[in-house]
Image 1 (cartoon, one colour):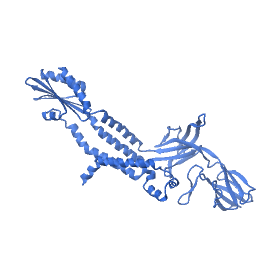
Image 2 (tube, helix red, strand yellow):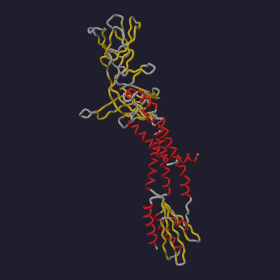
Image 3 (cartoon, one colour):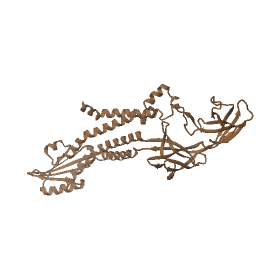
Image 4 (cartoon, helix red, strand yellow):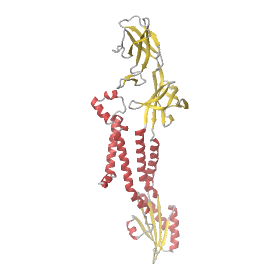
Length: 457
């Protein structure tokens, strides 16, 4: 039972099955958009389909548990297959009969016998001189049956298969490390602003252990007005202490403590501490409108004495979570909203929300109507933030796979035997050879050696 499972794990059928599943996963990951918002998915799929696909991890397929399981099984397949074949290869490399025998000679694909009239000592010197031109080293054995020479080349190319398998396993392990513990997110920082959080693909926030500040943002344009280049000056602070400053641009990131900050985009976003133009009027009246300019936290007086309005909070993209908590979903002005506190004689009378895109929102209260006329904007830089703990492991695997492929396809292990066998009428030079692959190429080498030995006498 155990052996049958091991045989299945090492079988080519299991490998092909895993590769088919992985190919299907890549197709699904390409066809189905990844890491969109819930609203965007619900606009594409029904509510039931969305729940099923989300449960299966289709919307974040490259971090799903079952993809990691497939990669793990492929690793097991390669490791068990390599372990199973290791003793056979080791035996074939170590247990080599350096003395050519008549039985071994029958099974070798390349062999020839040359008749020579000379002494055994003279033949030995001439054969050794020829072999020295083709091989770095040679093994010489003398006994009653004659003199034996054994040579081999590119022996370690036989390990290319195992190095390639090992490299694939290392790459898969690196991929799993990145999938399980890697971080990929985005952050938009206004000029002069400092942040310590990034937005992840699942739209949750990840807190950094340090602060990053956008000192400056610069952009140059082509004559037709299209952007030519844009750069951001970033400074890293840790516990209030400046660590480093770097100007980044596309493909030239800032790297710090395993995180890489890439220049990705730019744009304009509302300044949370900037000015907001607010129009105020009494409900049902068109005349007597009041326009004020103020910042979050500031207050202004209404028409009637003793009435004061305070701008408590400002949201560029207002949304509530499942608990009813209000938060900003993005920098974009998708749903700008103000929270206003209305006071009379210093006492809070009521609180109301003002939405720029929904001025007649039914939740607005009181006899006064508030309208957001304009929101001052500020340039921001868009950064892609990556932490890939498996990248060095993957690089190691890539180096090894290049080595393995190079050994496997550009070299081949071949062996050559020469037996100087005394005969009554002279000497018999038996030349034989074998290659574990690429025998057509080895035949040319074997012929060259045979001709060189023949012409030496």
